[in-house]
Image (cartoon, rainbow, N blue to C red; front, side, top):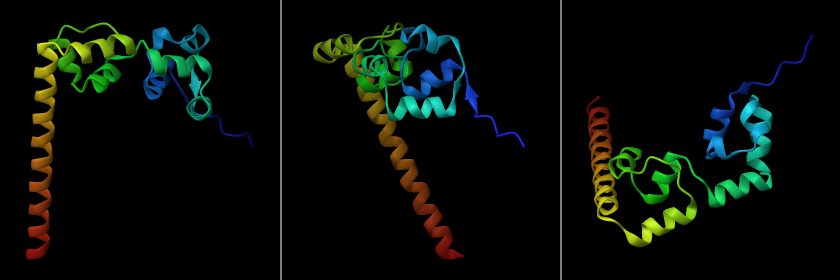
Length: 132
């Protein structure tokens, strides 16, 4: 019998799972498929280039949004369409432009509403189980 082949994924998928911008990764990473074992090895023992990308960027949109405390849609509304470095993110957080303050408040309200709905639904489930 043949040994089962390791599952592989596109480099873009691997980059997303690692939280890095694919275009900033080394050429050999960008061009080939990445196996699940290779991905796990990169995550557990990251090479210098991966540490550097995670530390200083440029970062993908979802990571920029997370670091700024806004949604990816909020980034677009704020005019941020390009990847940012850690230094650029730090500068934005220090300057706190009006759009960033607004988008952070919007995300906080959305999270509060989601928590309220989740608690309400849990209470309804508990009541339904108690009635049953």
